[in-house]
Amino acid sequence: MEWLQILALATVQGITEFLPISSSAHLILLPLLEGWVDQGLAFDVAVHVGSLAAVIAYFRGDLAVLVRDFGRSLVTRRSTGQSSLAWAVLWGTVPVGIAGLLFKETVETTLRSPLVIAWATVGFALLLWWADARGRGVRDENAIGWKDVLVIGAAQALALIPGTSRSGITMTAGMMLGLSRTAAARFSFLLSIPVISLAGGLLVFELATAQDSVDWTALLLGCVSSGFAAYLCIHLFLRLIERIGMLPFVIYRLLLGAILFYVHI
Image (cartoon, rainbow, N blue to C red; front, side):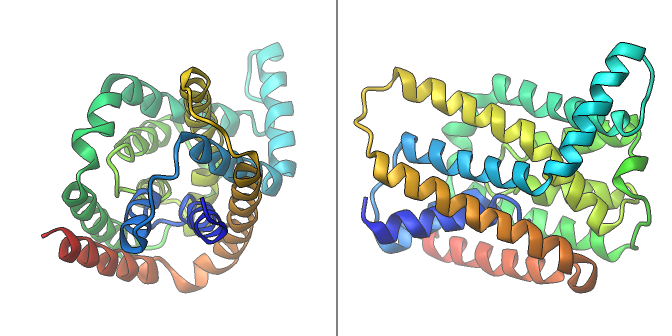
């Protein structure tokens, strides 16, 4: 892989992993437009590790509290501090884990059609716009209950459809349930930690059984670039989201969907 390809793909992955604009659509479109060969499984692992490191680093203080209170809730068998939020993150991951196991082959074959990605990019953009426009919620992530966990967790499972955007669909569900934009985004980012960990673990397992040679320099650069882009993206998104709303991302997704339709029809 050339340096430009490494930096471009890693940066795009880091940014689009957390913005509601679909990383899969970008990672398919960019190599197509540039005529690049597939980056390979090892590189996918590296950029996932970078994204995971970024979200853990950004929320390190929150995570320390969540882990502490989660441990206390196991000992006392009752809600303690922010233990309810920690449980919500864990239970919210279950639907996508089950769906991934049941539909992995379909997701990796049938649903990777460029037209499926284009329709999902446009369709879920309109749903994001509707959720954001129907009224701003005031609840924060600490007010999330079991009903919210079930709905947001089920929505996250839909993100297995390429073009949906995991962050986009979970934020959409959160806002539909009355969460503020910031609360929906923060919970979405916290949910990404076990999801990216599971996805990265699966990629590592597949990589361990593959016979491909490994370019460690490319992997390190991809990991660092993805992590830096992801950290900056999370920071700016959370600072700006209440002011700019979701409309810029909706418009961007509609334009991206139009490009995908143009390229493949």
